[in-house]
Every structure is written in structure tokens, then in C-alpha cells.
Amino acid sequence: MTALGFLYPGHSAEDDYPRIEMLIDSDIRLPVVHTDIGEDAHRVDALLEMGAAQRLSAGVEELRLAGAEAVVWACTSASFVFGWDGAHEQVRALALAAGLPASSTSFAFAHAVGELGVRRVAVAATYPADVADHFATFLKAAGAEVVSVRGSGIVTAAEVGTWGWDEVLAMARAGDHPGAEAVLLPDTALHTAAYVRDLEHELGKPVLTANQVTVWEALRLVDRRVNVPELGSLFTKKPVIQV
Image (tube, rainbow, N blue to C red; front, side, top):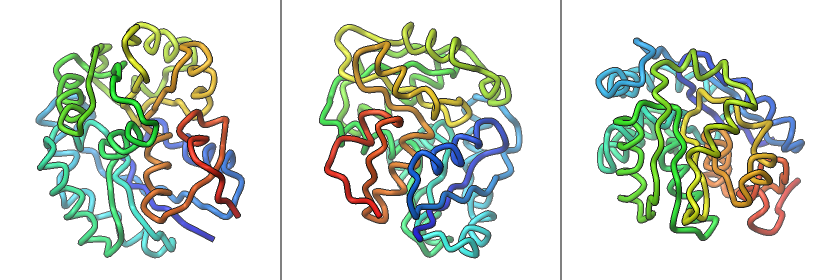
């Protein structure tokens, strides 16, 4: 069995993880530990506090006891707001605290864009515009060309967690761009695990969503590959290596 650990901020769309575990249908387990988020706000100062090292390190012992072989900070906004260098420092501190390979959802997006072999991306975000712009800056530092950015102005993860298919599809369509080779939906508070394949069908291009890429990143850290078409192009990009 391979256990992959996730530090998830608060409670919004954490049920995406057992859903993804079920879809993978292998020897892979996805234990989730919830971190204390402080103030639930997509606002830069609140996000910097949410992603502070002491908040993340508080959950690593539980993941170690669960047998995790890697740990991912399952939050996009409270990683990219630290900037490219600051997000690296955040992950290094997490790896040191856990004694395990570590990453974050922001780096998961950067690596997933590379995995798909695309360069031009559109961002369809739940966040206010200024926070969405921070994500675009992070992606540009990773070498992506961001052809459009659309924020939805949602301040709290709690509200994002109530969105269903209609809202997710409307946001993805509104944030798409004719010049984009892929569309990115960067919020782990957003339920998307059930929608990725349908989103790709509707938009006619790869779609990367936060919880999807977070699990893929954890698999990458332990050098595992699984083929799960229900989770979109990212999970069908390379040959299958699956127990």
C-alpha cells in the first residue's frame, strides 16, 4: 500500500480526496489532515497566516502515523501568495518538519502544466481578482504563458465549497480563452473531482483543477503513475504503471 498525505485547510471540498481514492481503485490511500486556517478569507494577509509554517507542521505527525510517504500542502492560494521563492521555502520547511518529500498545490499546477506539454494557459479562479493575479504571477515564474485571468470575487472557502456543476462549468467557460491550451481552476475549496472529464469535454481542452493536481503531485513525489480517465488528461498522459 502507498499512503500519500495531505494537509487540507479547514473544511470545504475535502471529500474530493476519498472520491479520487475510489476512482484510482488501487493500493493507494489518501489520508487527509485538516489544518487550522485562522480567518477564512481569500485575502493576502489572511492567506499568509493560513500558510504559516507552524500551522502546517502541526499536522505532520498525524500523517506520519498514517504511514504517509509524502505530504502535500493542499492549498493553492496560501502557497502562491508567498511568491515563487517563498513557496519554495514553505515546502522546504514542511519537508523538514515531516521528514518526507513535500510539495504544495501551487507547485502541483506548475508541474502539471509541464506534464501536459502546454505553455499557454487560462486561469478561471474563484478568488478576488488581486489574489487571482498572484497565481498568474506564480505561473509565469514557473515558465507558463498566462493568456487570461478571471477572478470570481469569492472571499471565503466556505462559499466556494457550496458550488456545484453549474457554477463550476460557468466559471470555467467564462475563464477560458481561445489562445489557451489548458484551463486552470486553482482552489482546493472547489469540488471538481467529479467534473474534470466533463469540463474537458465542454471546453475541448485539458482542464487542471486544484484537488486533481494535488493528488497527481503526491503520486509524482513517490514516483507512482495511475491511469484514471475520469480525472482528465493529466491522468492519461503517460503509460500506465499501476498495481
